Length: 294
Image 1 (tube, rainbow, N blue to C red):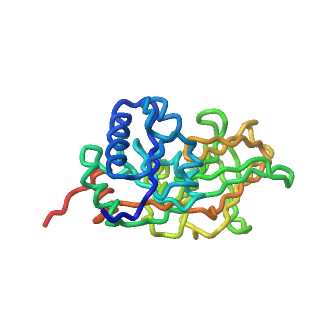
Image 2: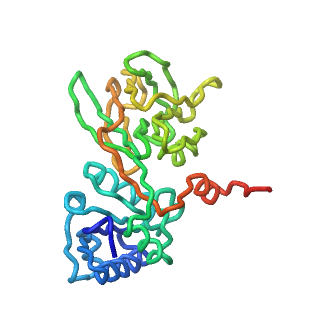
Image 3: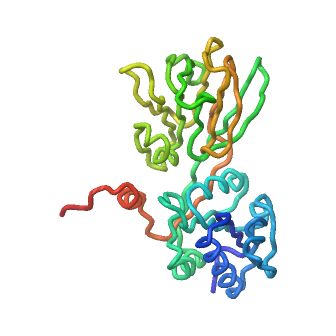
């Protein structure tokens, strides 16, 4: 069989029986097809598969043409923050709940993968956000996010004061529980729950969604994806501890007076889908939208 890929990495959902079952099936099926298969080291231990080469996530990015993530969107987000640095295609097999990013049915993966591996697939580039925390002119920490970067208090439901700048220009000041800065990929996640609009994945834009603002006039706003967004936490904030959450998986500590700079990452996730993928069909099925009437 002619193939678009030669070396394939498998990444899974730790301690999940269904995901481990699918991973084992995938490994033996791909191995039988003649592919070189690498398994992310933590998952390899769980599977007890001594025939597979166990490697770290970074090595999957360096050596593989294709990475298959078996799990939910959370597993895809964690893998994407690492794999986006490498020119590796990423495909998701859904063993989670919603599955906005993991769209292959685990019960039918053989038929789907046969077509994908022969070159029948569609490719999307999903950009990431690079977030930096600056204190007294010095960078203290940084990380990336696929979905969103969120400024919030260290305590739950605690109001904070901050200012927002776009490309160095003052936009507004806020008293709110926080601010969500989401990519189009993340517009169907936390941002959507907070009342933000859905951005189609091909848009070069970010959406800023205040969290429970103390005003009736504040609304989400969409800004150019190439703009730099700066959040300046007030020195007089009543909350001594602030945090920046990246995809709800990585947390950067910050303090009142710190400056948080958010911009498009130089890296992008190369996400692939089976042929015939329809983003609006995904929205209908995942968000329970109405079907076509005629």
